[in-house]
Length: 328
Ligand SMILES: Cc1cc2nc3c(=O)[nH]c(=O)nc-3n(C[C@H](O)[C@H](O)[C@H](O)COP(=O)(O)OP(=O)(O)OC[C@H]3O[C@@H](n4cnc5c(N)ncnc54)[C@H](O)[C@@H]3O)c2cc1C
Image 1 (cartoon, helix red, strand yellow):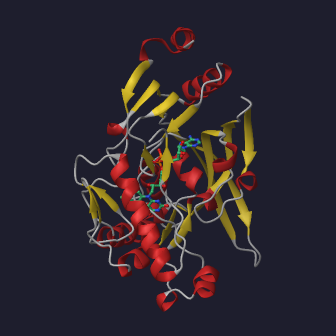
Image 2: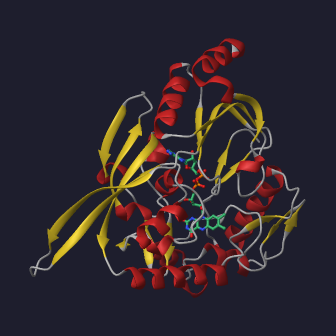
């Protein structure tokens, strides 16, 4: 059975199809076992074709963007893993819009393949003097992953989903569609993609014309603040747990009414706690770090430790921001 699926995949995907490919090197955690079948899509059309093929063959399909928000199990991922390396960015159109009060602004539509690194897109848009994504300078990962998580930044506040205009995607049923922003029901760490498992092929962002120097200043301040507050030069997948909403913090009566998951893990006394080669960052308690040889199993043990201690000490049930993928 697996042999015939291999032959069917190979017939279309050619020699770039690999089997038993270790995935650890494609994640920022540098953790994760092998993919049964592995393919690198270099264009949007290659991505769409590989997704449709995998689904026609009834294989589970997993899209790997920058691998910066996932923990892949030590036993790896069954089915087809497609690493998305599609890289096209371009300006698709310009429209003048009149705001209430009569002020005219230029809205510019920028199209990016889902595989484009968010940082590359931010630099492109800021260089073009376009406002809407500038606060995300320094965010790891790809456009597709950022839509899946509706990735965000706090200073100044912004969600990637806010700037989305329309998206080309392939649905679970294999339909190639264009959908508007409203399709995604974007919210904190949430988009409809987490439920539908549609695959994003490319995205059109609607951005406002603005002063290039002003945008670079804000973008630079954002990345400086990121460098001051997040551990640098280490192997991690960013924040482990989601923050609480203001309403949850008030209802649960968290210490100092904090909404910060990192604050709770820190005040549970867990900074520096370790399991195997994984440890909770002393700089930012919501980051788990791989010292070099950590297993997914070690990270899971630390996640469970933090979750149980925070529940015991503060009555707060933390939910994960990091996504666990594959077999553990
Ligand atoms: C040091 C560090 C700092 C971080 N800072 C932030 C931050 O400030 N704000 C924030 O929100 N996050 C942050 N993160 C988390 C992470 O960078 C983001 O969530 C990022 O947007 C994930 O993108 P990715 O391409 O790496 O996704 P991946 O980890 O590759 O995948 C995540 C999920 O998205 C899905 N996916 C990927 N591409 C597609 C696609 N084309 N179509 C459908 N689904 C897809 C994957 O299948 C998977 O389910 C940080 C991570 C690190 C390591």
